[in-house]
Length: 88
Image 1 (cartoon, helix red, strand yellow):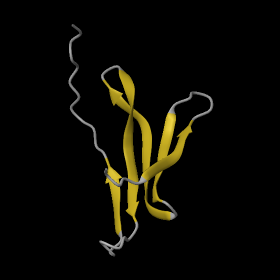
Image 2 (cartoon, rainbow, N blue to C red):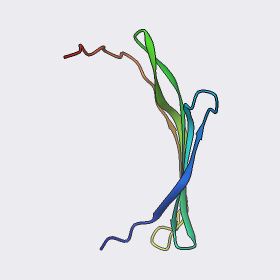
Image 3 (cartoon, one colour):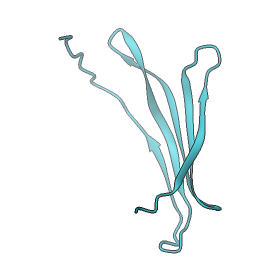
């Protein structure tokens, strides 16, 4: 069997529109917190409308016995050149 960490977190949403604003996740192994992930969402213009898409976030992984160096990264997404797909 694989020894995978447990994942818990929070989904932050706008109370008026119910749209997701942010997702925060924690990775834990027993009492050890292994890392956190934050994803920020916003509307991205597509053709004549919008899509709710991730626009940025952060990953922060804690040191472990196997790899004592702390790892941290920032995430950004750029969207362009959407092509409308014809309906079937």
